[in-house]
Image (cartoon, rainbow, N blue to C red):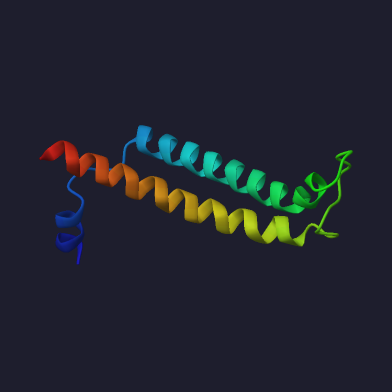
Amino acid sequence: MMKHLRKIRKSRVTKEEVIADAIFLFVSAFVSLIVVFLFDIHHSFYEWPFTLKFIFKRPEPYLFFTPIGMLVGFFIIKLLLIGIKEEERK
């Protein structure tokens, strides 16, 4: 089993990779929170003056959709980076 795992990843995970992943998680969580917030207040933009009208009356949608968006965003960022690395190899 260990030989198989070594074939998949030949080098150890570096400190820079861990820091980069933490930054990617933070960025994707922030973007996800902004998207959920904009969806929550989008009814405010229909009438002048723009008073804040919230769709969500409780914080559960924020607590549920922000982590989901964070994971999806992190996955997309990692896929893009893998694609860039593969393109550089060619």
